[in-house]
Length: 108
Length: 428
Image (tube, rainbow over all chains, first blue to last red; front, side, top):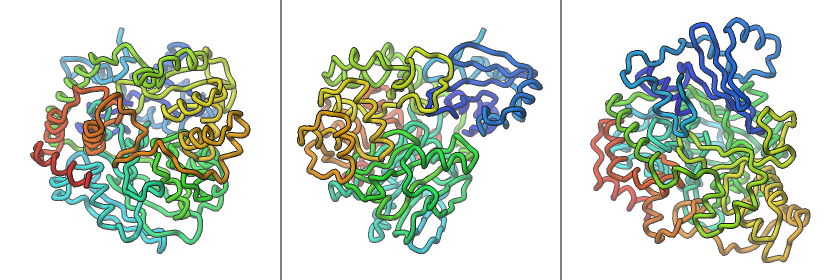
């Protein structure tokens, strides 16, 4: 969530979550299951407890359309957001990495 | 109030169903800073109407480390005094972004209702579909009704509906730091729950300066004493309950942080599923998120297994009753079996010895600090919106640094003298 806030700050110069291109999905709260999702130019990167997955954006849309029950309500707007630019205007690199309080994000 | 704020206070009268809003006056912020400073001022303003005040700290929901805290301020049915209960996890964040920095709920509704607060709008709705349901079913119903699984919910269960002294306002499905019986106040007002969601934008006076300072503070706290520790079980260990780690570990699935908090103070246990499972469980409700150290310790002291203790914590959260009270009164009555303890929820009565004596919920451990130092640190946390447990764990988040951050964020010129005065005011 701090990563979302940091990304939102990069976009809006204020604190907001809606414009972030990285998102923590928290919809399966009772199951203790969550993932981090990142929107790239052509892909969606999904980091789940069981591993990393990269999907083409079109394929994600088709799947979400086929089974809405699997998608969080806030997952859909991610497709409408700006893709990650790795905070290209910042010398120290992506803000999400710098602000993750539990060091859960890394960049290859 | 231009910065770090959505600039609105909602005044909700349940007796008349009238909702008004007013601006968050900059002079009020200059004098009271935020959080408990302002919830207390609002409480006093409306005290003849028995208000419940929801609020967030000045830094809540920002990049300031551990800026997770929201709060409920009201008169405790247990102590007869005004107290503050912490709203952690993502509840404080969602309240801040709902479009209102503060919400005053006054009067009593003639029929069960719930509040839906979102994007600067507050509505009172009929709660006939959820009155009578437990906390879990109520949260599920509201999220399904609104079609959004990220809605944050402050709800009461049957304990609150029946106006038990030990009724707790729960957060989504989990226990909260409400050890003041605020769930009873919800029940008396026929207020089943408050649902929150928001997409607001908080502007910052010196945005780059604020973010730079947040980053420096985060680096400092990450090097703190807790760096190699995680989970709720480390907290009892730190207060001398060392055997809890072995007792609980076989059930632990994952540790969870509250919003932007570097230390995960919550632990999820799997009770009906293999705790080692990485994939999404096929079971709908496989476990429980432990958020309350003293509830867990209370059941452990009854001699229960970790599985039985955690299952009872889950039942307490569904019923919306304070597990600490259940455990303490269960011990006094000689109850040792989970079934008989669960049966005691309905009509639970008695006098608690382990009850908060100050303004701030005893949910947060003292970690050996003298009472006056603990109270001051809690006051600082509740004014700025810092997670109360993390505030004690991280001296790096000093009063000076938080004031500096508040000034970068708002441009208002807070000083340590102002902070001293606010703390004195709320401690009267």
